[in-house]
Image (tube, rainbow, N blue to C red):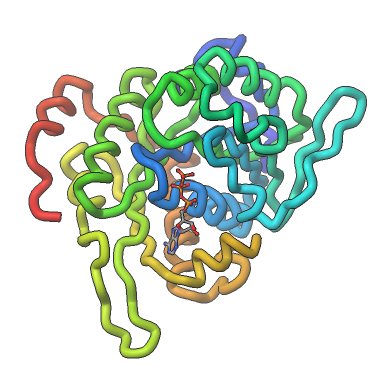
Amino acid sequence: MAQEHTEQPGAGDGPARSSLIPGVKYALAVSSGKGGVGKSTVAVNLAVALRQSGAAVGLLDADIYGPNIPMMMGVTKPPEQRDGKIIPAENHGVKLISMGFFVPEETAVVWRGPMVHTAIQQFFRDVLWGDLDYLLIDLPPGTGDAQLTLTQLVPLRGAITVTTPQNVALYDVRKGIMMFQKVNVPLLGLIENMSHFVCGHCGEKTEIFSYGGGERAAQAMGIPFLGRIPIDPAIRTGGDSGLPIVVGHPDSPQSQAFLDIARKIREEVEEAKPTTAPPLESLLKKIKAPFGKG
Ligand SMILES: Nc1ncnc2c1ncn2[C@@H]1O[C@H](COP(=O)(O)OP(=O)(O)OP(=O)(O)O)[C@@H](O)[C@H]1O
């Protein structure tokens, strides 16, 4: 695992950028157009699911505005430093670095592209990631210049976007997809989170944020639909307690959904079938079209 270091397509083409993370085979961004859709929850569970599938995995929490991945991963202590280098924390088999370890919460909100640029360069230059098959990067939500800087600086193999099924979240997804288009990062697919709720008592299924909007949006935009994750209190409590559901309840249907998505991502990435979203012009036309009910 993790011994072959090929040049990655995407925003980071070019030797200067690739040498930023020489030991990482595939860097993938986990993004969302808006906050609170469960992007970090998905990033954590996917990272662990990829690890469970046998890959060497790291997770970079680059969400400067809400770096809550250490809590979700059950990591409380900041990483150790040795000889000027940072040794990533590790839990559930996944190496972890969070902006939250280094950026005082009150200053993060005013971070702009250049500050992100410097911090990210440092993370790659000074962190001993070792050899990894996958480095998942949890981006801040939205499409501001901090996000753009990140997508341009890191040699991304692809991006995964997370949304809830309702239209207001989907509108932002379209903007996010356009951002990746601009910087030539392939869209690996869309994950619909909080797609429905199954009552633990009567088994009735309730579509709290509508249903199926993510799949329709993915179809309309010509990007793969990777799967849907239901709303489940065990997913939230897993995040709050630092025991991701794929570790705490590995046999649950929710965990199986994450494992299934991880498998699809590996197939897409490793079988060298990069899915590039359609050209920007055709996407713009589709974006104007309604997404049906939802
Ligand atoms: N499928 C789910 N079922 C139940 N709770 C969920 C689910 N997905 C996320 N949550 C909960 O919703 C809250 C927000 O999730 P999370 O922090 O992952 O979102 P986010 O998109 O990363 O937010 P932000 O953009 O603000 O960082 C958390 O409390 C999390 O535990």
